[in-house]
Amino acid sequence: MSEAKYLKIARIIHDRIKDGTYQAQEPLPDQEALAQELGVSRLTVKKALDGLERKGLLYKQSGLGTFVLGEIPIQTSRDTSASEFSGLQEEIGKEKITSKIIDFSIEFPNEQIQKNLRLKGSDPVYDILRLRLLDGEPFVLEHTYMPVKLVPNLDENILKASIYNYIHQKLELKFGTAYRKIRASKATKWDQKYLEAKQDDPILELEQIIWLTNGQPIEYSTSRNRYDTRNYVVFQNKDF
Amino acid sequence: MSEAKYLKIARIIHDRIKDGTYQAQEPLPDQEALAQELGVSRLTVKKALDGLERKGLLYKQSGLGTFVLGEIPIQTSRDTSASEFSGLQEEIGKEKITSKIIDFSIEFPNEQIQKNLRLKGSDPVYDILRLRLLDGEPFVLEHTYMPVKLVPNLDENILKASIYNYIHQKLELKFGTAYRKIRASKATKWDQKYLEAKQDDPILELEQIIWLTNGQPIEYSTSRNRYDTRNYVVFQNKDF
DNA sequence: GAGTGGTCTAGACCACAGA
DNA sequence: CTGTGGTCTAGACCACTCT
Image (tube, rainbow over all chains, first blue to last red; front, side):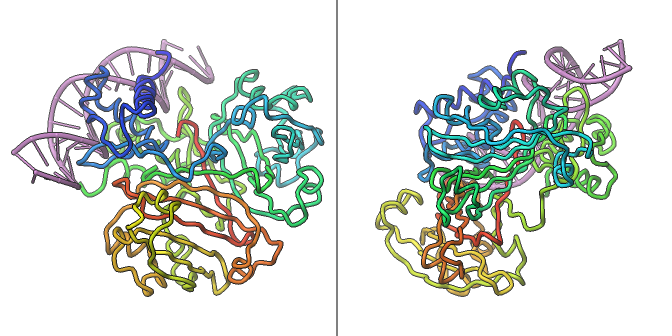
């Protein structure tokens, strides 16, 4: 089975919401009817609907039905989901994002990095400082630590392209979970130099640890964003 | 049935992780064994584990087992989940949070508010500006719009206590979904006055729309946080 | 009472990891 | 090959909403 049925069903219903077959604020056919129509069990339909509910496309009311949520007024195309694993290139587009390597070295981790990446002092890490540019304009300053043993043979060509592509496609590693902390902070001298932030410009900072599906921490990083070009978005649903 | 079985099972396993019965990085008993022990079907156990996985307590590896993730190094008690509906009082504690009402009026909504709350121009809204203090120190400046028809009889006593308590317990309304946008911005004169922010202090801003379980928007609000006392946290899991 | 979504079961088969 | 989690089914009962 190449793809789970419930994912196919979810895509079908997703498409129907997008193309207007199911209208905003209007109810979908009930789960049993969808199950019949699509040739699966009701539970499989429910699982598909649960996924779409988490994504914010619909909501369910026990006893009443399943409804299309409709457009979210404050949502814009510039919003960055805080719940995605994709790198900047996949998120925004390969053509638009370029990277400048400011620093790239291999070192032994200090105590904080050891703790965050669950390493010994003798396990070397990459220490990567990259400036990411959007249409040639400074966008994000990323400081990334990764264990060398998990990401062998990292080089400048990969850094200039996409680390995530290398990890996912070449090394075939999969991200499992991430803990992300978002805060505002003052512009440092580096922000002023590389992001071309003014001294009193705020910075939107994201600090995160990413784990592989096998529970190993693979990345500890800090992203400093220009305040005028980026925000993070969270969609929250009861129960989830 | 007062509470779903899978929620009880989840709590039991949660407790076992907390009290060290299941150790970090170690596997839990397999789903079938847990099902036998706890007297439920395997699917019910899986549902409980799925919930704990979303919360970040454990991760699963198909073919291998279910493992305890363990402590998250960068997590602190000050972290505010960006995925909760609770108000400040429930989050931080009734004793520590006080509120000062800066402005409280009823008005007809402008176009933006009409769109965000899905209202007509003739549907009045509350326009509430509150300063929330933590241990007497300025903490968050909240600007909230709510439809009058959904939240009748709001008054200053409620605003000084907890709006969310009133909505949930007195009106018995339930929040269903929320779309939250987090950004950094510069301190305005109001931030300087009420939050006692300096002119060049950054502000951590959260803009959100909250919907009830029946799909009606009940709140559009903007929270301006002092940068040195608050951050938002997102936990992300593959598939979820 | 009728119709909806939520939960739960027993049983089956699949995909995947490791010996 | 064995053991794990992932998916799927058919059928059942429950809680909830509205008429």
